[in-house]
Image 1 (cartoon, helix red, strand yellow):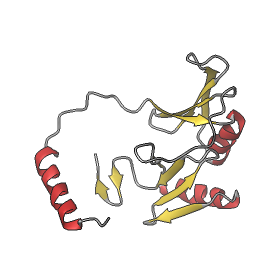
Image 2: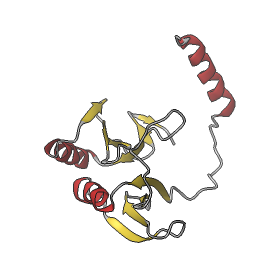
Image 3: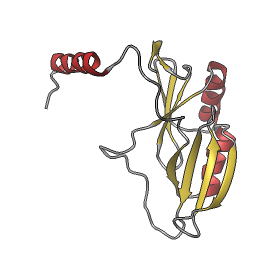
Image 4: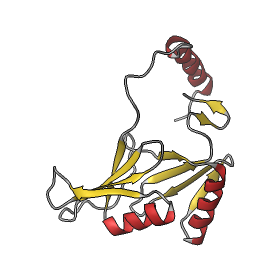
Length: 162
């Protein structure tokens, strides 16, 4: 199946004309509180996110929806958190990227931090791909795809997106 690129571009321009507002009202949301993923092992996840990526662990407590499971959080800046659940008594199997599911999580870091974390990923042997000189794509220990983006919040590759 081939993509009709001119038709896609026409549809994109129509959507922009109909829905993108020059003067947007404020959002009803205050921000992203947390995004929750699954962890196969809490200590491995903590070592990856806190020690390698430098996202401080902020809390860990019992998962109210599944006793004996942990719910834990990492600070990803600007008041936002990345959260995890482990389910030690369930055989959930490995992470699967599926159409319609999570594609990736992009986290903004300043350019000097981006360089430092790129070096840490390389030293740790974490496979990664660099795109446009500002994005590093890689997977966490459970296979979730992450992006470290050296652009400021609200910008992407020189374009304002908020």
